[in-house]
Structure formats: structure tokens, C-alpha cells
Length: 171
Image 1 (tube, rainbow, N blue to C red):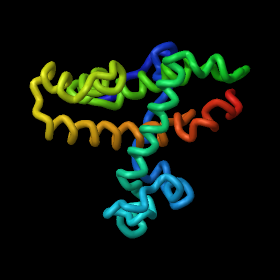
Image 2 (image 1 turned 135 degrees about the vertical axis):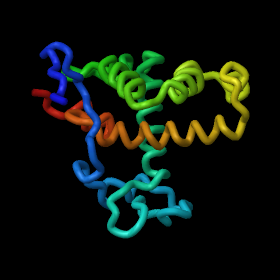
Image 3 (image 1 turned 180 degrees about the vertical axis):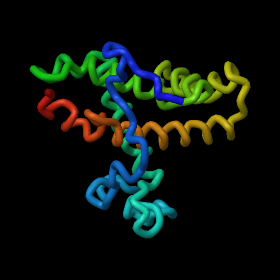
């Protein structure tokens, strides 16, 4: 079967790296973000020997940093404190939401939208979605892990490191 051709105006602006080998994770990317109390990586940030896969503690921290920047932009604080002549903070917020929507499944997106974007507590989300507390927190960890990795591996402009997103020269 032939691949489906996309119209030029329908091409996705951001795409995930298709394989782990395309983006090489090494200690320079993970060491500063790793949790020293992590029982999987012991503070190194990489899982296994020479696998090049980031530990969950690293990807969750990447997600939390991106989420905190999104919340600053959403509250309007970022406009009052900083001037930007390149990428607008709204572009970051839009990319944050679009990457999240494209990366997550329907159930994960519902949890993400209610808990992270709308700010509802775990009890409110569980009541709306019919989940129990344990499944909710397992889903939250999966969402943080999946989105943290997607925010770092996205091309052409990764959402993390945040400073590079705003200062990198756009073509």
C-alpha cells in the first residue's frame, strides 16, 4: 500500500522522533535532572547499561518544568516580566497543548486536561472519569513520563530546554 501524500498546508508542524536511536540520550542530558534518590538510575538519569534510555525521574522532571512555564504563561506573568522579540510565549503554550494532545491517548488526555490544565484535585477527576485513586496516580505518572520524553525529543524545536526554545534562531 502506498503512503498517503499530505497536502503542504496539512503537514504537522511538530513531529516526534520515530525511534529512540534518532535522539541520543546521554549523561549530559540527564545528570542534572535526575533524582539522586531514584532506585532505577541511582541519580545518573539513564536506565540500564548503555541503553541510552532516560529514566522516569528525568522525563517527569522535564514535564514539570514545561508545565510550570506553561502555567506562568497562562497566568500572564510571563508577559509582564520579560520581553521577547522572537518566539511569543503564546507559541510555547500552544505547542505545549498540541504536543500533549497528539501524544496522549483519549483517556490520558481527559486526565491531563482535568488535572493539569483545569487544576482539579484527584478526587474530582476520579469522580468524573470513574477511576479509583490508585489508577489515577498511575495514569498521572504515565502521562508525566510520556510527555516529558515527547517535549525533549520533539523536532524541529524541542520544548525543553526552555531557554533554547525561546532563544534558538528560527528559520
